[in-house]
Amino acid sequence: MLAEQANCTEQVIQTNPCSCAQLYEQLQQEHCFSLPLSQLRVVVNEEFTTMDRLLQEDDEVVFIPPVSGG
Amino acid sequence: MWQFSLTREEIVPANLSRQLVNYTAGALVTFEGWVRNHNAGCQVTGLEYHIYESLALKEGQRILAEARERFDLCGAVACHRWGYLALGEVAVWVGTTAIHRGSAFVATRFIINQIKNRLPIWKKEFYVDQPAQWVLCCNSNGMAQLLGTAQSP
Image 1 (cartoon, helix red, strand yellow):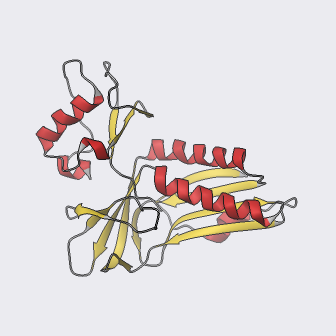
Image 2: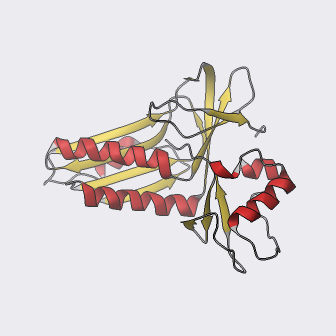
């Protein structure tokens, strides 16, 4: 659903050093995401992590909305 | 046999349960999740599952590994479908085998609950008379909440 709102499935970003939470806030402003940070989980380089994790160069970050499999 | 998989193709339960055949097992317990024609008072025409494939595969394999640790099982197979599904189609299949039925019952329930809570898969519902919507994770009552109007496919 974030991909639909951003109209893209992935994005390469150059940013100042920041946390996952700060990155989401930037993206939320850019794409008008409707989901608040509190409803998301975050995955960095295919492992779940915390929103306060500081990002490194070339990290792959995926924000995970509430899931609904099954 | 211990196997978690993801597929865009039709799930054929007989093919999956055949993988669990094991002469030490006295019980096979399976669960099938079907696409139904209603949710939260709306008439549903179909579902579309979106998936984060690499992570979903890892997480599914972790769930089966946890089930193997926790329960006295002979084997476990689970498969989740993604893409567009029509009414009545099988969206998810779970089967476990055990020497006695008790372990297989609880393990199958554990695996489907973990799949619904943890797997990075998202469901968009299509309706007879309103725009499609994303559906949030089911709560403890098994009732899904609607997340908001989705864009047209």
